[in-house]
Image (cartoon, rainbow, N blue to C red; front, side, top):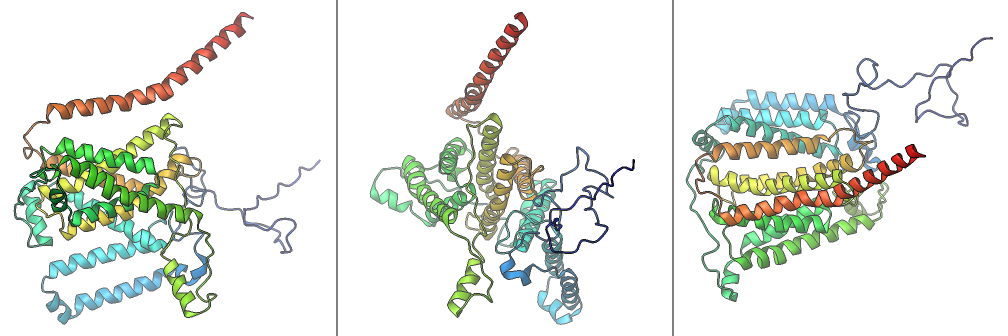
Amino acid sequence: MSRPEIEPELSPTSPGEDSDVLLSPILEREPQPGLDGQPVRWYDADRTEPYTRIVPFQEKHDTSVEFFYKPITLTALAVGLIILAYVAMTQDVLEEGRDKRRVGVYAAIASFLAFSIIQFRDGPFIRPHPAFWRMLLGINLLYELSLVFLLFQDLDSARQMMTYIDPSLGVPLPEKSYAEDCAFTPTAIWNNIDIFCLAHALGWFGKAMILRDYWFCWILSVAFELAEYSLQHQLANFAECWWDHWILDVLLCNWLGIVLGMKVCQYFEVKPYEWRGIRQTKGFRGKAKRVVSQFSPHDFTAFKWGTTTDFTHYFSVVLLLAVFLAAELNPFYLKTLLWMEPEHPIIILRLTFVFLCGLPAVRENYQYMTDPRKAVRMGQHVWLLLATIGTELLVIFKFSQGMFPQPHPKPVKIGWAIGGTALVLYPLIQFGVPAMRRYVRREKRRSRTKVQ
């Protein structure tokens, strides 16, 4: 008796038996994940899911602007080479550029970002366009490589190199304290209200958009103020009056930014998404509104961190809080060590860049934490941002040798010891004790079964 022939497996997009499309006698099988058709081994990344598959362009892209999602890699290559040839070979351009090395560095950076836009993997966001987030990933990588280079320099050389970017740098900064007049009077409070209050509110608006959780933002807000208390013996600008910490910062600026950010998040959670193409939109006003809507989210996921669900979620949330806290503190140390004013464009660009990188990074981290079957490996944005913040810490630790000789005050050591103990005791009580009880009950049932 002849064995029945095994029909080839159909892909999810192949027509079924009820389809009116004529099936060819031989169907090609989908390529297996891995190299050269070999199955994925245990240490390989699972590329069977659209989210983790390495593709040059999004598979599920925005069909309402289909033209902007078509690959134009060869066209971009030709245009880029023409621009490079014009800049490199036109004498007038070279004379206007004056510093040939500076122009060469700019050209190298632009070429790398062009490669990033075309060839990097897509992330979780597709608005305003996946190419924007690929370029942002390229900027993050350039910043990380710059930090790695800076890590192998000494502090004096690093300060000298900063003058290549801005000749006005390289000058020691005056120490400024905000705790000179701590009288709780309207005049003293008014004198402490400046542009940094607006920066506080905007910063926490951005953090609320990233974290999408009230409790998460409030805990981080209080933790940052406690960190300022702990480090004010090293950085003079961390020294503030008590009402500046808890009234101006936490209860006014931070609260305003968190509430507005969460309101925007709630709006996007309930907003219906009906995207039509620009051609299908009638009227100039409708077309203009459609263009503006391209910069709003394509969809929006509400984050439910589940801190008390299990130990894995608890540890992930605590780790994320620590990373955010480090990302907040790093620029204060970097500007002090490298002699940059708080309002210097480099500091502002760094804060803006971390905010933009944090949007897809936290989204990838949330999916990696809550949906491990689909996101079997950490996303590229969160991986690179973790590397960047970690490298910043290494640079700070290296350049801080001998810069802050004053030891930590005793109250600071006691406070952080209490906080660290609480972080350890909570999971033991919340997760360890119930797990131990379940283990004891399970062993009792087993012993009873053996006796019977």
